[in-house]
Image 1: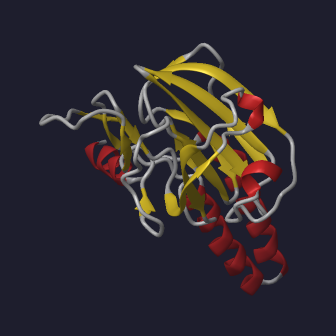
Image 2: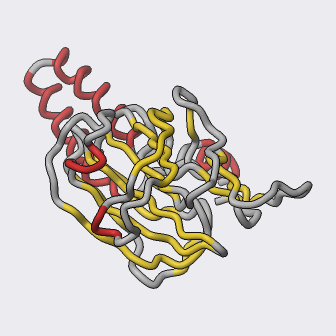
Length: 232
């Protein structure tokens, strides 16, 4: 039993959202092996990829008030100023925006950038342009959250891409959420935009790799000497 527990502790957890897809890939792989073994090995590789896509590794999140962490794994594709989505009712003023592009090889579980109360969740239908394009923020299918953190409001937007066809949100309006807590995911390959309060300077650069729940995107207040962490 101790050996089994040791093996389990070394395995990366899989989000429950992925089980039907992994099962489907595995079933098709068995059929491919029956039809022609070389196709079966291709199916095996795709099943392994699907399993890795739905991985949900634990993260250690800095929890000091004022810290904004990355909501997604991926590459920082843009650091700019832009007006938030009109459906959020945050006005037309340009706000600092950090965009994170997730490829099909990134972990796609999304985590809250700050702790606070979820004021608003708005789903907006749209097209499926390449999520790396700037106009994808306005034209693509998306799901937006406004989180009221202590002294600030943060907007985080899940944007579908060329391959993504399903945005999943685990939370609801009025719910209290902790920084780094899981709030959703996107299948398969997409982008997240984070809108920061006016005057906040992002602490990341284009091309940098972000880790959901761990990478600090910005600090809403003057940094202090101490920082606590929460594993999850």
